[in-house]
Length: 146
Image 1: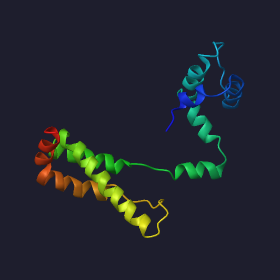
Image 2 (image 1 turned 180 degrees about the vertical axis):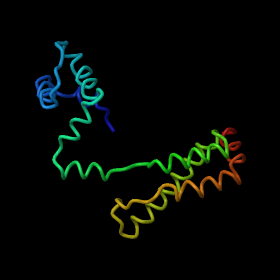
Image 3 (image 1 turned 90 degrees about the horizontal axis):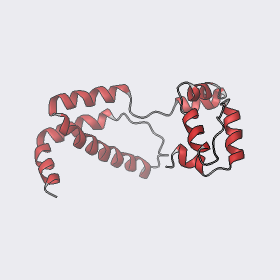
């Protein structure tokens, strides 16, 4: 996925000035080469992005609200896993949970799913933590031996 800066660098200077105007940003007089970086910094400045999101039409705002990643419960669960297994074992747990989740997602898609089904990530973190608890040191040794 392209970064904001890469996207802005590929645009025409006139287009960037229109974007700045739409965002209500006062772009300083800089060289055309520095304009994408200045505009990117202004767009990501504190409050500017939030203002734009709040100004979206209600249906667009609602669609963005429904997009979620790891929730607060997953972060707390990972903190507890790290407290019990040690911080070094958090990475294998996250990796194995991601593999389990990916396999489950592929299973759902092969069963006619659309790929938009929400599944709690904690249901993959907990079994992964048990796997790492039982064979984590052995897996870590194998990985370090590569």
